[in-house]
Length: 330
Image (tube, rainbow, N blue to C red; front, side, top):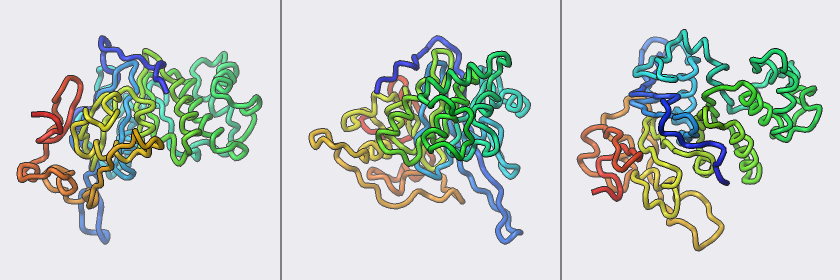
């Protein structure tokens, strides 16, 4: 699919900047022993107007918690460090409360986010700022997303899963948000339904808005995004343009990213990638060592990799990697 609805813009101020962001939680073992679980460490990300940026990582890696942090809906036992800027202004708690659901909109992972006791049309209308034309705007959004006439009069339990997901997309569409966070919006979909859903999500794009597309599905990330930030064990390990995720991944610089790309099933035998098998498991967020988080699974690990945590650095124009020995870089 072509990604023509979102235009790259280099001359505008970033919509969202996440700088050196870390997130941890306080837990109590047996009710007494205090421990800290760090789920995100030194995360970096920039989203410009006109961009869809995919945050790609395995399930349970902490991606959705990043969305919660931006929206200001983290639980009380959380602790954050670093800074988040929205439209070049620090995103404080007061500002999060002011712009949540307005300037920044969320497409949640689960259709259970819909109110079961409210008709879908009214739920979408509640997200519209223009009080005069709420019904017309809601109905127009439903038509754009291919929802049958009369859908607005139905309750969520009367919808199919695909229809309910389109209602969630419509809620983000009508709000005129400048930043949309899509949190795993395509779980468990087959290829046909996945491509249809991605097509609907692309309709949210404009040259003046941006999107963070959170997913564990590398295929979905490549299909929809301009830029992909790869998330591993709570850290950004590579940020690259979607064009770098082509062929055998010759332009990718991190071994984990290249292994991810090799896992995409390709029906054409001539186009299949050489599968890279990773051994071992992702390290626990409890008492993480001060070393490369991928070192114990990497095929190229050496003593330098276990001395410290590598910093995210630009190795080629607009291509960043957190690796002491990036692939293809001398």
